[in-house]
Image (cartoon, rainbow, N blue to C red; front, side, top):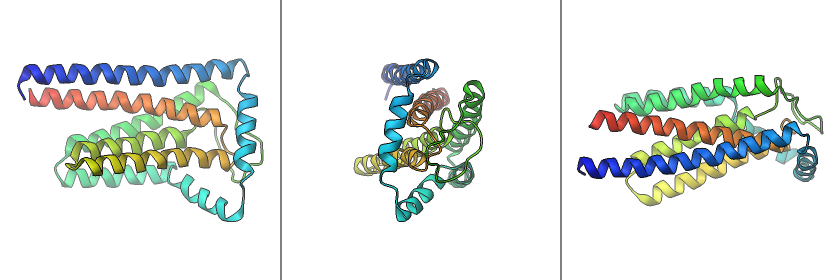
Length: 219
């Protein structure tokens, strides 16, 4: 691919990425506005009551496992293992992409929680959690890590079917982690949606940074 075509392709990617970031930011801002005006209570309570209507001992065990796979401990371990493997296979730029996207994303989530200071729901919590509620750290962290994992697979895999299959599977997994937080009663649905929105915007920004680095390296 010549330089002119490469520049044109990157401009298209940049415009698409800007649109995606804008969409995620608009969603997050809309939730924040509704939160400030206390207009999310009815929506949150209705969703929580619907989801928790399915509570059973077996489903609670299943949801506890799912939610663990979005925890700080698991994500930190997974990022470390992914980075080590990528370094071993001489994919250092992807390794740093994984580490920085999740590491800085976690700090960003803590900042957002400190800004909004929303208390956790008090509607039939099935497990105990500490800290503020908005936006959901599990949802945001899972979107960033599993989303970056999907991007890495798209970046490296050669067969389109593998790219599609893994992207769909990881996307469903992200949704299940968010749903587990509602089921277990430790997050409002709006916390989860805001976590996805913030995580999506952050991941897209990191992908832009990675692509820019790759472009500069290949010029």
